[in-house]
Amino acid sequence: MTKLVDGFGRQIEYLRLSVTDRCDLRCSYCMPADHRDFSEPDHWLTFDETEQVVRVFASMGLHHLRITGGEPLVRQNVTSLIRRLNAIPGIDDLSLSTNATRLGKMAKQLKQAGVSRVNVSLDTLDADRFRQITKGKLEKVLTGLQAAKKVGLSPVKINMVVMDGVNVDEVDRMVEFCGQNDFTLRMIETMPQGDTGRASSQSYVGLHQIEKDLIRKHDMVPAVMSGGGPARYLKMRNSSATVGFITPISQHFCETCNRVRLSVEGTLYLCLGQDDKVELRPILRAGISDEDLQHVLLDAIARKPERHEFNEEPGKIVRFMSMTGG
Image (cartoon, rainbow, N blue to C red; front, side, top):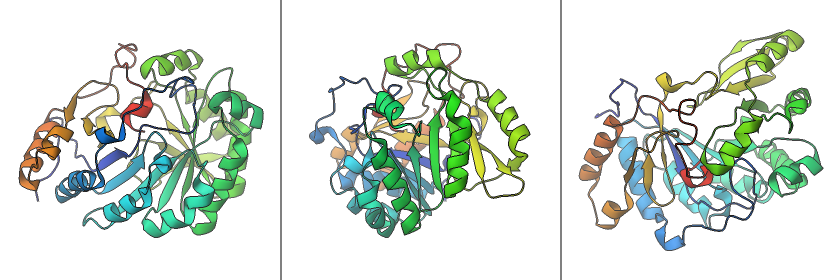
């Protein structure tokens, strides 16, 4: 089997696949409240085109697939696409990132389609604060979380972007909430991604001190969790409660990066913090064969940059996170 190995010896096993750039929330660090510059559906990859890219990736050893957006559950017939992708030989880990506003109604069909686990964006447990951050309703998210748990999506991971002056005071409350519900909490540092990301990075909180405080308060020890992502985990010594830390700024994990991102428009992004990319939609619509597409992907992976430059050049990336895909 031809393997996807970049120029720095990293094996690429993980694709974050955006199925839409639309979202029913407006999180302050992701998308401007008045943003309406969405792609037209004609510019989105079709389900057939998406399946071809994933099939070729999987033939070269990629096996982690995460469905993202925007908010992936606003994509019409998304469970049909998930069912097709789950059937591709080699894909043995299919997960979903969601804001959970629609998860209450869709959890069962997602599980049946092949989703094994979900990551849910949730930055606060205060309804008023949630409305300020997202312009949405917390109740829908909490209902979605319980639905995911009920149908057996496991683990359910809560992604909390920790921001100074916004929600850093809720860390202990979120740890307790996740422990009570058997969810995994993952705290994330803000990134200067687009204008919204740069604005929110003024509220940046390095997670090192929070990690030290949790170790002291809760007698936490290092832990390991399945999945292809970059989080470092701790668990409480006397329980299954687990907390993860994603630190792209204070402790970047570029040397172990095993992932690329595919936008809904067919742009393959080789690094979240660089502009290196390959446009796949034109060649897909020209009818490229699987064999020729394999060569294109191999050439792209060979050009994957060594690391991001969020610290050195925070203004470098102008696209919104919702456009890149998760």
